[in-house]
Image (cartoon, rainbow, N blue to C red; front, side, top):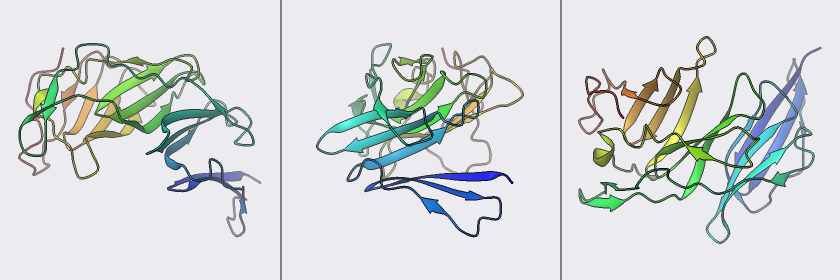
Amino acid sequence: MSAVRVLVGTKKGAFVCTSDEKRQTWDISEPHFAGWEMYHLKGSPIDPNRIYASQSSGWFGQQIQRSDDGGQTWNPVGNEFTYATQAGTHQWYDGTQHPWEFKRVWHLEPSLHDADTVYAGVEDAALFMSTDGGQSWSELAGLRDHETGPLWQPGAGGMCLHTILLDPHNAQRMFIAISAAGAFRTDDGGRTWKPINKGLHSDFMPDPTAEVGH
């Protein structure tokens, strides 16, 4: 009988919930990181015991955690997220320009092919990648350097890269979504990006016919 696992992040900690394929009863682990806001938890499709977690606190700041035993134990890993190129500015709530500033990690997306490779979507909107299990991070700067970048503006929760989708059939293709700049696609592993907002009726989102970024 197949096992089912659900990873739950809350404002007061994380839970690992397990059940069989009938899902009639669940075993719920004790709260992990009690008192911390958990922005995302995601398990590796290559190694089910490998789980990455992003926690944030107004007092302690941002921290990435990793488990190699299915969530029984956790260890902090790399937490340095530095923009690779000059940060520059983006549009602020009032229409003025505001410096790009790293705040927290909203989304973690493990590779479909390598347990040690994982992507991180952050606020202010940028995409980072680790190839050593989260110990170190480097920015895929082609996204933030896109020519529409100075026009991006934060949504109600901040200017966050909150979604990363990997194409299972094309390792070079990836989709991301930013609040409130819209959705983008890369076909070359993150070097260049194209807005894919056609049909989304929001005037502030980048034109899908715009040229691909640097």
